[in-house]
Image (tube, rainbow, N blue to C red; front, side):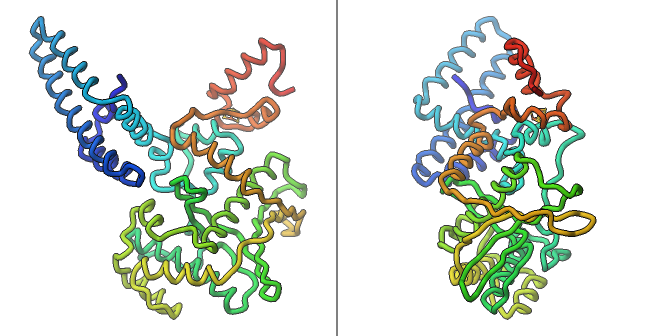
Length: 384
Ligand code: SF4
């Protein structure tokens, strides 16, 4: 039997119990049963472990038998189904999602995953080369210097989004650096991003989304980079359209971000809210404003990427991208299996082995070694 490894991680059992019950409670299909099961199992395991270690410490000759019997009783106490619920919880608690991105993923996490999932994994786990957390607040219109609570931080983000939308409702045609978030495809995972540019045609009632990419060389990017950029703009469109369609509830936002919707904003946020001619005193009210404004707009009809030369600032090229909801959903679900710990990370396929040449983790990459061995047996060079 595989036991919950909470104590092995030296985590405080109460904390794990709290996390576990929160995760289980979010599964509305079986919330009550899961919470009770986890609560019973964690407490029972603590009792069993205490007893076993006492028996071990005593060191009496027949204690080994007692320990075995104690373990067997514990294993027999829970059904296969119970254990599978707990195993899922255990995985969730130890998954890349909870370890590296508790709360939410960034759109950039998914585009990096698209480049090489193994590289993304190493960026979280290899000391010295660990990635920096993406910063969403960079470039936003309102600054967060004296904003301290999470509710205030998210209040400012929501306000920035409202400002962009209000600009369109007032006849504006362009908005830049627009915060965006949501929980696409009902997968229970929250995603956050920052749209580079929205262009709105009020007469035709058309909304376009453009991602601007600066390039050192005056040439178009590789196919692999274009694939990554397409994924990025597809995700932004999905998140934005979900808001327009009313597919995101404020309770979902609060649950994932662990926010108190009713917590009153601090003075600085209240000031910003007032400057924007609003009266919302908490996130619940501000999100109502957001939903009412965004639902007056339209879904995004066109997505694209504009490539700009770094030195001359001239446009190198513009790529309009196609959007496929089915394709995005399939890819997204596959990526989430990694984040949820349902499968191991994978590296690049042989046709993308050129990516390894400029990878910081090439020397230590197990995937690359494994593939190189496989191909050498077949007499194929990975870079061919
Ligand atoms: S060496 Fe290749 S497979 Fe390994 S992490 Fe880097 S890009 Fe991915």
